[in-house]
Image 1 (cartoon, rainbow over the protein chains, first blue to last red):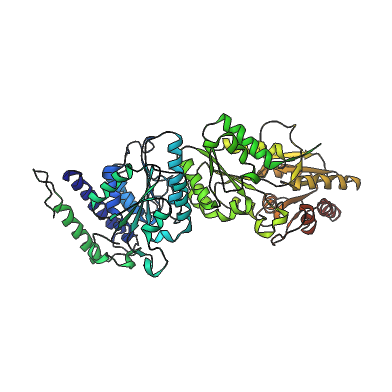
Image 2: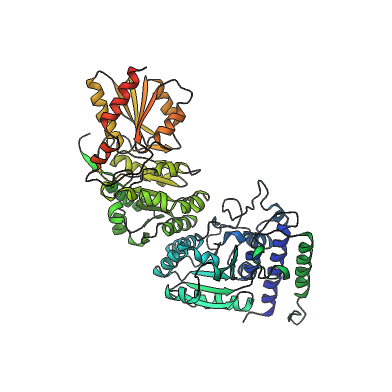
Length: 291
Length: 311
């Protein structure tokens, strides 16, 4: 068990990430990937806020862990995490998708400090993660690679090529996390492609599988620890999540995959997230007020 | 020129040579190592060789990850799969990230004669040249293939190397160690024939034919298709009365197109020998295919003579 201060710190970061996501999308007619960014925000917060071995002042530190957002359309969640942990000023988040910005619509490793690989064409990131894990093993480095995949992204055949590669090469320094938010761009995953049963698929491909609630920080951290104990095979977390999590009107609504916010929606979202942030204050005893 | 040598063998052997010198060199293969000859590297350095199965897309993205973590991966498979099957992976991750991934397109052009259109890359140079920041190398013989591998190692960024399946005459083994953008294979003053890969030997044969007609033909191998050596090509074009290009590739987006662009402000007449806008097919020999698709010394000589006559 992590102490409650750690959990609280991660939850605060997750709420800040969600708030940053909303502010990056704004309410002036710009679209943004709200749904899939918010569904994975707790996972991203658990990684950047606690689990990842990284140094925001030295993004190329050779002993770092790697984070690959294979579902690159959720980049704004990563930008928020990078800014909130000190890779670049939080103010810079406002420039996202502006001409000349370091913050592109999808992750660009040449432009954004802390982005490890370009993703956006779905299905590539797990293979890229495998390559990094192989290189780290060749160099006898102890870091790990964490790769977040969308459940819609499991439609891509290359994911399953990479799943075979990781198992064949026994990449126990790799953790894949499926953001199982049940919705893809235009509707429910279940009505588009046969991705179920997901856990059985990964198991049969030779992976250690952990199923968990992707919004339960303790469960996420426990799953990372369990992955550390597994040797000789890669681990995948099937993280059950809610698309649009944390923003009431966007939860489980496919149209917020890449949608706009009205002025009213924008303000409701910020109010809800402010309320969440206010609730997440530590008490003298270290107990959380929230819940 | 005295003997025929194999570019694929040269590719595999040179991988072993650079692997001995640089511990960061790793090699990935999509179950064709016995054909691309990357198997030599597997035998020499098994811990740095990754068999990636029949999964070219995964191979290229994995190479991208290896490069992002400091390795220098060389991937090989047939040119048609490298440039086509894995195009998205090359474009999105390798090229946009300017990652240090080397791609060997083996058995390129019509050289995989028996396997037919599905295995004959007649548009790979166009595809690879179209990607911003890609370097495209088209060696003409075994020695130049070795130089291309070594040059690729020393270029910081993505490189595509086009390798032909069949044995080819040795023209450059006596030359220096550096990979030149262009290499004059034979001197001549009336017409310049620019060629790459297997068409260099056809161009040399064409020069012999032209010589018997009293026409002096210069033969130039174009080893770097991108960045295209415009100045060097232009200077040679200005020194002759006509220019012909020759390539085992369609006329779209390849050597003919690059030379035409280079000569856009020049008055030197230009013609080309290339495959039409069509796919290949099976045949019992590469020579049979080259005759069928018009990739012969006679075609080159005829175009050259015609340009000079109509000047």
